Image 1 (tube, rainbow, N blue to C red):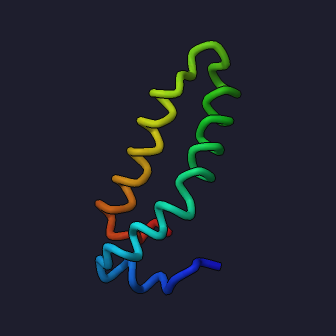
Image 2: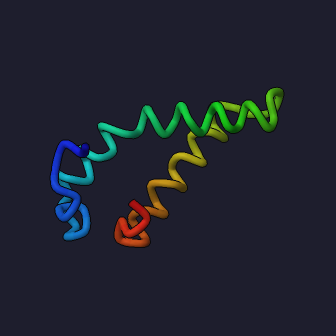
Length: 68
C-alpha cells in the first residue's frame, strides 16, 4: 500500500512525487542492480544502474504515472 493516494501522483502533486521517490528509490535501485548483475556481472557499474533508475523515474513522469 502506498503511503499516499495514488491520485495525488496523477494530479502532479510534487509532495506526493517526492514521497514516492523517497519510499521506492532504494527498492528500485536494488532490483535494477540485481538484474544488471545477473546479465552482466562484470560490467554493471553503479553509474549505469543509477542511469537506469533515473530513466525509470523519468518514464513514470512522462507517462503521467499511468505505468503504476
